[in-house]
Length: 158
Image (cartoon, rainbow, N blue to C red):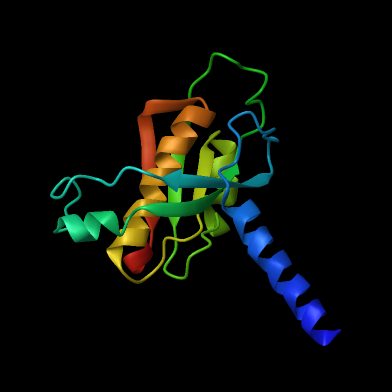
């Protein structure tokens, strides 16, 4: 009985991992003034030398993978379907970035906020991969102003 339970448990864990790694559909609902976690993939490695911190093709390949970000849309986003919004990408040395003390300022200025989950102190591959995957995904998913994209963070995570 115990063996059967263990087998079922590990099958569930394996299947849950598969489900969690699927990218979030582009037509998934996105509420305003709430954080929505989005799964996305980086399937094409940056070219060696294209990203200064990735010094070899091997480094660039380490950026490939499945990543996540939390998306926050400003109040009024849905009401203005032709407007392009400023966007800020936030990274943190411990990963799972938040708006913290910038929240009220970003809300007041009407920013789309992208908080990277896996970008944290450590090797450059996952930091660059998380940023590139989130950037490409949010550019397809949300109406951001291509001339008003910003990034912030601390330490190696940024």
